[in-house]
Image 1: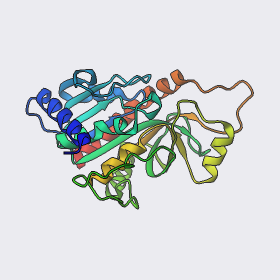
Image 2: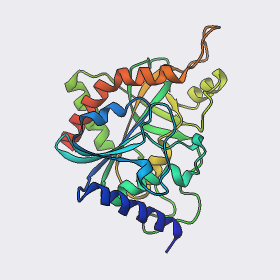
Image 3: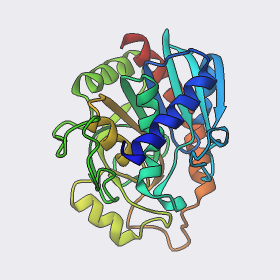
Length: 275
């Protein structure tokens, strides 16, 4: 057996042992400052990443580093309270390992969220943006020998984000009175914030928001045939016309994401109810 699959299977077994028979049907990845959504999960089972032998540990600000399993919106869910980033020094195999473990544990749909800078001038701090497509500037996690048991060598990415789930999200956001923008997410390596010239470049090539995560997770989920919905919280305005004294600050990003966590929780809960 491929040693990579042995690692995935071993961690999946460790997680399932700690879930004590609970089988999730839906996975959620909570980005910077958005871990509070996990507080809405009923009858939670908390599994810290550090308790799973060999599992990568999240070190980013605003990422607690736990799996939280339980009931949300009437469904069995498992949420990542903090993700793994490429900029933390992990190889891409480690970055996407949690997604593969959640798939092994039983999820059949994935919701990803992140904090992102608004490149589009119509996006403002606190806005929610439905990700309708992406531009990947990170290493592709499928590089290397293919996991034939997971999916094809050359998976289709024509629709990385599920059209039916996007339509449902827009409908429910309208019902809830939540303004839900739509756009293209650009994923870079980080950890440095982008320069004004880079923001201008990303806007020119069709980007609406930029961040340092998410796309590798989406790629491995789609490789395995898992439908995905993605939502960004706009936490800073990523423009190229800053005031002379402006600075991007990571703590401000977490604060802005936390401020939007209420409407994000409301929308995701409604979505899960209707899936």
